[in-house]
Length: 279
Image (cartoon, rainbow, N blue to C red; front, side):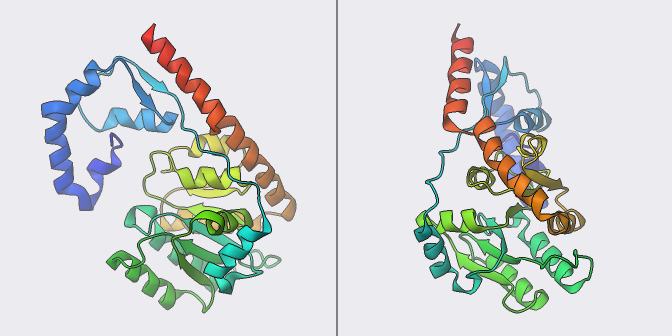
């Protein structure tokens, strides 16, 4: 919660005042007295310095964050997903898998996808994949607003809303997508993109997903700003890639997961950090 987004977002002004007061009265002492602060990635650690003052931790350590490896793909997973989303069967698709929430940039995604569908700027040799927006929150006012936005702007039967996916349906959605998309305005870490990497699927993310540097450096991501223009460019950049380049990114995705986010790797980092702080 030290990320400056929580203090700067327009709809969080009252909460920002509450947080500032809590920091001044209590939390700055907790941070200052701790032997060390552990962070899930470099960007989270960097941003933590920008929200509150005085901010004087004794030590800051990037220990990373581990995600369990997914089960191996089985045909039943694909079937479970198409049962939840029958209209997508046999079609290529982009996958958004997260909460239906303003922070996630879903409005940007829908508007950008609609703009690409309307234009001729996509690579004429490549069809535009469908868009699957999966996750809880469709019943909220924001979710209903996004449903209407997609209905108003996008071609019929191009955007699918299967709701929250779990178990085999979730893994089927991840394993079978062309790419995972998350144009979020703020993500301390981002578990869903990492799960996508673990399934061998590249990710198209904003530079507000704090692990973007690690993934981008490994060649498993396309990254842009969390704006309409940036989100449109993300989708266009993917569509414009050759089949060979897409396959190369998919291969890099799983390698990136093993290198940065596997439970075994992060456990070793965490234990080493605990030992160093305790010494």
